[in-house]
Length: 201
Length: 143
Image 1 (cartoon, rainbow over the protein chains, first blue to last red):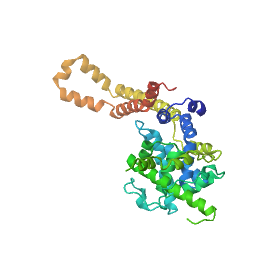
Image 2 (cartoon, one colour):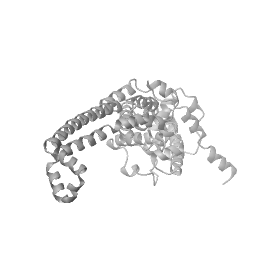
Image 3 (cartoon, chains in turn orange, purple):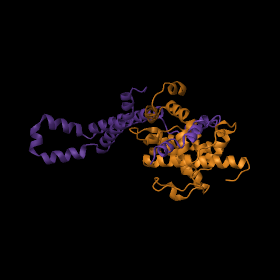
Image 4 (cartoon, helix red, strand yellow):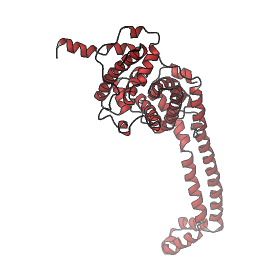
């Protein structure tokens, strides 16, 4: 009975309240609603299908166990993505891909891997058939804190305010990270193009 | 900052922004939600229907215990003479007022305290056990 409930366009908080009352169909509707955005987010942050699938699964199971104690007077979406982010950070920590100092509230910006490029991208980038591959590689080349804001904004479609709630950081920090992430993406795309055309970065 | 610089800052990442909006989401693995639901249903604590059945059974058991202990308490009240003592105390007040301490001591010895306590506890247990039924009725859930 999840599909009709999900199709009604009811709010996440209403579904969560139903889950708290023991309504299994409401949880099924939440899973249907969130599995894709969570998977897309995890895929971009972790850069692999298998890890993303595991992280999504673990996130949804943690949501299930935490929902009975969840506060429903606050938006559920950032709370769910915060759980997903923590699962992804666990995976990255296991890979030793991020220093522990980056896991805090976002005070002090982590370093960018590449120098910021101010010159615009060549027009032909947008025309390329393998644009998706290029973009995926460029996002994967970002440092994790920048990768996660890009993933939250452009694959999970969260607003800046929602991302700030997920990261438990000020909105300005999110804006700065997005700005720097785009600069780094441009640099990465230029680098990838240069590599492919045999040039030097 | 010049007008050109300001325009450049505002528009400097329009090209990247355009590309990011064209980012296609990776396909979600088939059966992902089914696997999640299978795991959560295995780990499921007794839901409302389960809890209501438990409350009903607990309430019934407590009610049976209350009935048995109540019957035994009543029988002991008769056999021990406590009931007769109570009746006398109520009907002939002068008997009580002549020696109230002796009367209360005699009543205290005759009363079947164990059975009375068991009856009281069973009634309290029945009330506590059936509370979820009352809450479910209040929420309009099927009982």
